[in-house]
Amino acid sequence: MSRQRHVLAIDQGTTGTRVSIVDAKVKVVGYAYQELPQHFPRPGWVEHDLKDIWKSVEACIGKALKAAKLKGHDIGAIGITNQRETCGLWTQDGKPIHRAIVWQDRRTADFCAELKAQGHEAFFRAQTGLVLDPYFSGTKLRWLLDHVPQAREKAERGELCFGTIDTFLVHRLTKGEAHVSDVSNASRTLMLGLSSLAWEPALLEKLGVPAKVLPRVVPSAEVYGVTKGLASLPDGIPVSGMAGDQQAALFGQACFTPGEAKCTYGTGAFLLMNVGHTPVVSKAGLLSTVAWKLNGQTSYALEGSSFIAGAAVQWLRDGLGVIKKASEVEALAKTVKETGEVVFVPALAGLGAPHWRPEARGLFAGIDRGTTKGHLARAVLEGVALQIYELADAMRLDSGRDIPAFKVDGGAVKNDLLMQFQADLLGTPVVRPRNAETTSLGAAFLGGLGAGLWQSPEEIRKVWKAEKVFTPRMHDDVRARHLGKWRDAVKRA
Image 1 (cartoon, rainbow, N blue to C red):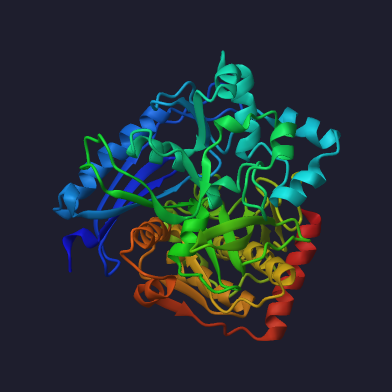
Image 2 (cartoon, helix red, strand yellow):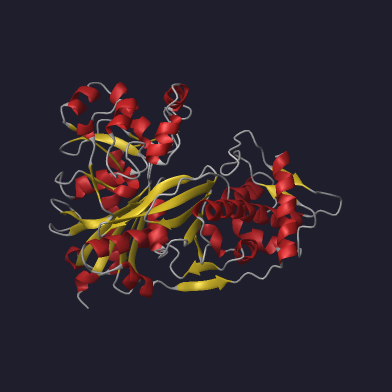
């Protein structure tokens, strides 16, 4: 095997940057991580310094190469995945004109409310598959153009580059020669037509965005440019794959067949289902988004998120003091065989899809004198799984497809009790992968495909490995009882 069959995957996230080096057998042979400073200039505002992001990427590349005992010329391709809606503006030579505005930032809430009051929400939803919310990057760009001195004038003259973090990294890796965004990231901006896969003039007009500032929209796997002028890598390495973090995780889980789904259990939980080559309009308030574009074909996804997943366990630890470490929750939950009548609704930050009740609050129901810490711990884990069940059920109804395999990743998937209960509720196998870093793996797969190191997704499917499969074993009447108690509790949350 050529030493150049190694792929370098950059995973630039909200709290830090990861770089992994993957060989042809999908083994991670080098890895590095660096935390990223976050800035909170006002309540509700969250920013990153693009210069800090770039420094963290360069530092991690060097450390990962050292860990792998490789040189830069051993890298045959670079793939990128990123926090999706974080965005910024920079000059043609790569100098930021303002900090990046992070996906969590809420400063454009008033502008979103204005657009809704003007009756534009249905139009944006139909065109983009998204809702009008400060979460998405189009309104962030509008703010930058309006508040950074001379930004709008320079943007209209074509002197500035806008982009999400994928765009910024490719621009820097290629010394400014490529100003591009892959379709999965572009579909999170409120500016891209979900069917046309192009920047839509009517959307740009409503947002007040000049087209000259926008990157070229490209597939998720092709050579966008080659490295040039870097301290950490030699010139000429193809930069050849990109996807937003959740789409990269879907790809990294080898969910290539319509109906296959993955759920990432982090602080919250993100569930994506591959729905095939035609976008699906959700009736349950889920998002329609681009999954990826390969070889001229676009795959779409339905996306739903639960605001609270791992955060519920953190609350048990930090808020209630029920456990000292998050890892203790499974053992505590196993001290009882069931929750009794206790149900937990994890609405600690409201309820998202399919309820969309921001006013909802967390709730323990069914507590009596016999309730113990074990019952509470088990109810919290079951409450997380019940939320995910509702999202998956909404996706099945929206897409008209069953889920043949429910693949999982993220920190909480180490909890066997949670994974078994999830499988029992869904009535479908839950599959935990051997390599849990599925987001980075997806970026590596796309980078390798774009550079020709792998020839097709099916070749990748052959090297993807499961670590454990949780098979459903709950009787239908027991499942119905759990769901009935849950629905009653949600009404009271």
